[in-house]
Amino acid sequence: MTRAVDPTEELAAFLRTRRERLDPNDFPLPSRRRARRTPGLRREEVAELAGVSTDYIVRLEQGRGLRPSANVVEALARALRLPPDERDYLFNLARQRPRTTDKPATTAAPPLAHLVAGLSPLPAMLLNHRYDILAWNTEMAALLVDFGTLPPPQRNAIWLCLMHPRIRDFYVDRERVVREGIAHLRAAWAAHPDDQALTGLITEFTTHDEEFARLWAERDIKVNGRGHKAMRHPDAGVISVDFEVLVPLQDPDQRLVIYRAADDESESALDQLCAR
Image (cartoon, rainbow, N blue to C red; front, side, top):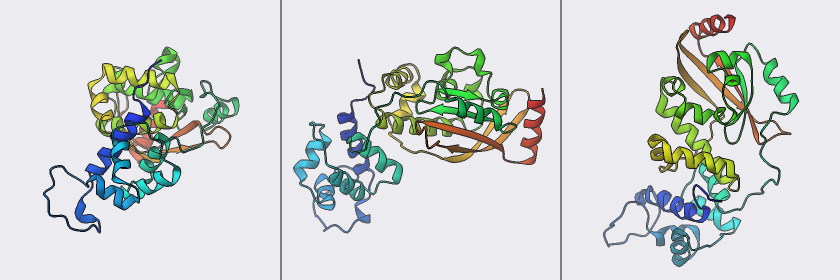
């Protein structure tokens, strides 16, 4: 079995990239005369801010098998000024968050499937952390694609965006949508490092899609619970939607995604589309 990225190596790379993006002038550090040959903070400066030794930071960034404690991870997150999503990602990489022993959901729980259907006329679908589409209503199928006609491995929101011939050009701001999806996927990978199906997806995307490989290497981590998308539907024209992502308490591995028309024109276009 293989991993898309080894967690120890990813922890090392993540710490380096976050250290290098920081501006030393933003920190209350003593002035040092020697010129900076690389961007960002020096390792000894991160060590000073986090209250650990420089050697410890060096070994972490070299991926030498250290497993920092929760207190050290918290200190590093503060020293590197990580936003909440990146802080969670760091805790996951360091294996300092509780993990579920349950297998990821591959089918929708019946109550959730009924809820998705009952949300009509709002387009809705249910995803797991891999972005596999577990359930959808007729409005979502009319807006995106008839998921029931696709082989199960292709019923994945990231796969569709990257590989499906129609969906590739579906989003008006395609790069932002892809970038946000990859940032979600990276956070999911850190939270579920032993999910071989997820690892296989990431390996497939990295190997066969240059856009994914480029954005994956940037190590963006962000989880959006709501947002806005504009879509070019081949029959209904441009449709703008606001979306909300909800997490069921009893099934926290799953995500309920609900779309709502963002303006009167989009609402009219959605109504006409679904009436067909």
